[in-house]
Amino acid sequence: MERLRIDKWLWAARFCKTRSLAAEEIGKNRVQVNGEVAKASREVKVGDEVSYRQGAVTRTVRVLGISGVRGPAPVAQQLYEETAESLAAQAAFREQRRLASEPALAIEQGRPTKRQRRDLDKARGSAWGSRWSASIDDDGDVGSNS
Image (tube, rainbow, N blue to C red; front, top):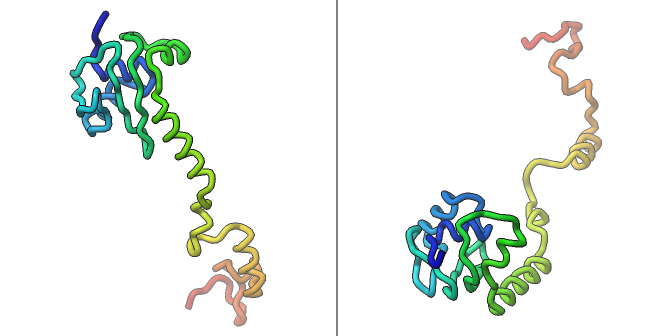
């Protein structure tokens, strides 16, 4: 086997879980072969350079082998070699993510946590009895809404 469709190769090399997901990623123009936007029917051969955008990072690999069968991960990793630029970009992205602040800390409003809810209840001076609608009113009626 000298050539293989790019969607099959992405599936066999474990970049995508299914061929249909690989074809979908190709349809969204996230895959390039030798610098050109690929179609699902595009064939790759040994020596081709494939760029695949996963989230914010673009992985660039050189095709070392062709396999139409999805095998174990160690075998799939032998089908390609990642370029030095791609590895450096991934490391820079990981470092940037590590140094970034926690997104949840930026939220100032929203649903309170359990601890915040308890603090609010203490500050209001409310007890559980005041929350129930079926409480005894001052006039002695039970659960009347009138």
